[in-house]
Length: 596
Image (tube, rainbow, N blue to C red; front, top):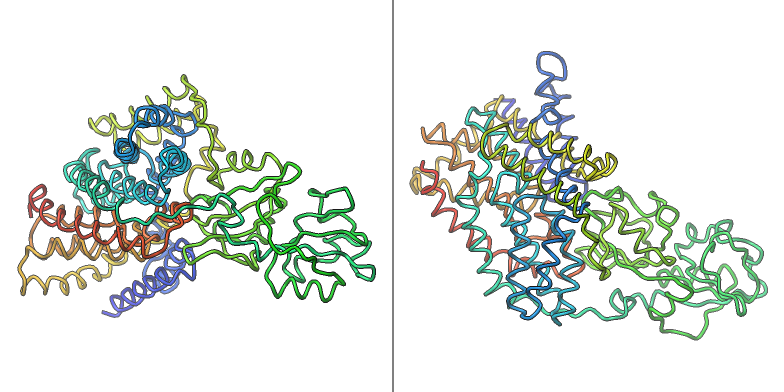
């Protein structure tokens, strides 16, 4: 009983840590794994070594990593763009038709590639469509995210959650899911989601129009000030780097005007002179301290716009930190952002609001939107990086017809091989990755960069917790408590209960972590009731794969948060009704498709 209590305490502590978001979810998962080893619930030594590192060795972990690479192959070759180009041409005559086609294409593509990758492609496309059709992006971006999520429920490879539960089912002796096993309900989910988005969501979503001037959009005008270097300033003859201006005052020099000359590059190394006019960015108190202690005078100009930041071939750009970005979990200062990317960060938009002060110390996360200033070519550099998704309108990359067709055939072969039972999905996915690299569809470095290591280490850390829950009898103990409800309300309520639990868990923590906790309990509950565990697994899978009511439940929701200028309440407004609707649909159809 002591082991059960310890496991329950660890599970509760993990849930609190996930929900608080004070620590990255993957770090929490690895801490859980380490704690399980330290207290002896799993041992790294033989014969229990397999339990301790089971997350790294799990078939689902390897398969999910392979699917990231296959998705990247389709994107890098432009295979997705061919479909997108036809969409933009065919639907350009009608707003309604464009909306339907956009949702259909996003959802269909998400059934076969990673959701985040699909949404990353479609965010700039959706922004272009919104401008052409004169529609606010806020009317389209949440629907794009939701369409990708419900579309991902249609196949085994649609989401990492589906693959994970399939692997866990095999570990329990139930066999892996077939490629289109989930399609029986997934297509119904997708149809319901499409109708909901068309008739309800797009009508209730707010119409937020972005100001054309990015300085207005991020309200940074009050954080920009011009100052003059006075004759007695201690800065004369020194560089910004030598004076440690950024570290001491937390202000950034964006521009130096010296007579008719304008210095916009090499600013940290430029020696300041009397009469130099500096355009600085920082908080009000930081600017006051900088002026007071460094002998500067504030000039009379009070309003600044985009034109002040884009002279001399400089540009402003918006970039979303991608889910796989190396910046996630770091800060601008630790990442040496200015030197690495050749750009200043003027503002950071997070789900809690826009941050314009003390930017160097702000922890960055996937989905954060950054307002950047840099030299000409900045947008191209950001597009070439796997760390960012830029929001500027851009032409779709030219489709490499030979490579695109090759990538398409490789993915089709992976799907067909698994669907017809020629080889397990793990084998076909690995072979597909090798073919992607060997045929030149993707480079080896791009393949490494495509893997979302956050997901991989999250799985590696949490999977041992699922093993321990079964090994110690914790899953059976919790199942018996849940099954007490069936004595009062009947067995028919057990599927809706597990669906609801999975939805709530996925909304406050990782959807993959949610299923790892709930699958052992679901299987134990089925054994206690002497019924087929499959309906329990399906309820957990579909609920975790379609948790929509917060921006944190899915990467794709975070990715559209900034570009759509959404508020937390927007996700509640359109996410909760759809989650309730899908809950009702699942409660009706799961017992019919997979009888107890």
